[in-house]
Length: 202
Image (tube, rainbow, N blue to C red; front, side, top):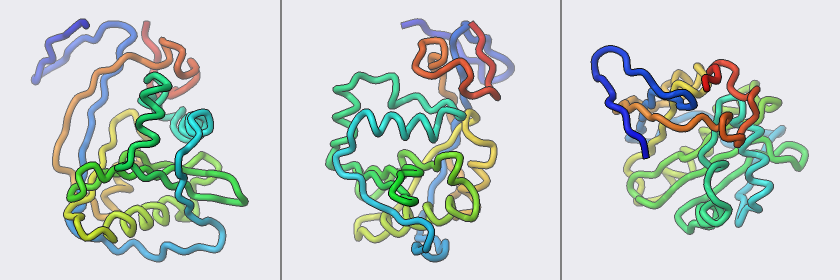
């Protein structure tokens, strides 16, 4: 595995085929009030034992524009293990019987619940559906007696609106990190057209 020395002041050149993200971690230390979890045009369903192929398709539909890659580059066996982890709960917002988003909560540490994945397909964005989905995440997480904190992270590869949305929902930034990864477009896990806001360099 190759390594680079990351300068904490100034610039660090990356090898071609690599991406670097600034990751921001945010937390909610008490239950926020985000409005009703009920709507007439959309509802939430728990997705028990998701089919791997269907999950990947939904994951790509939501995240391709933002270079979501982590569930695409691992082996089928590793993905099945994650999808069937008893500490993981996966929910999908549904419109007319179709999955239009993803909410994945990790209760591995029951006091510190993680929003592992959160997103909507492009056609479902708007009309407050994102806030509604987060209201459901908050309700589910804080309905557990053990919950002391709800947390998540976002990065500079994500939608520029994401961090402001999370803050408006009651999350507070508490940590920052730099993540260096292989560009999933160079490996073929995502098409070259994915994430046009991040140019491919190889």
